[in-house]
Length: 205
Image (cartoon, rainbow, N blue to C red; front, side):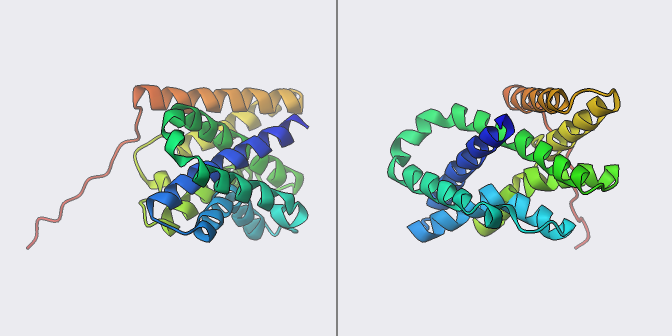
């Protein structure tokens, strides 16, 4: 029940941040809602398609579409004050990342898939929605930039699996993984931790 509540908070936050991205591209309200739904629910949809896990989450629970669309429209209405809530949305985005990651891992585990696929499933669930948002908004996906994002998702999944190897209760393992991932993401934002960059300049003319 707690995980479901966190999931609803996460998709709402992701929808609101996606609506702002759509607004920066001067999209109409339909576009805002589409971008919001794709961002909030796209990671889980990509995971389900790749793993053959049907029906898709939003097909089984169509209310999630209404939640994300409503969050997007509310964001469009109150956009002038959203700038003051920037820090809050960074926190909620980090929460969404770790919650989606753990959920993705759990679904792959329930399908009895190998450990590697469990980790990949968590990362796809956590990151793919943001990639789809950035591609549709013609931005370089955050996943491919120097921020610690996909790496935080991978570490969150790894901690979740590691905790289970010590026969820890499932709820405790999920909590530890999410707290760890959330702390990592917040510290990375606070201290500007970055992944190494590959810089190449072709000098042949």
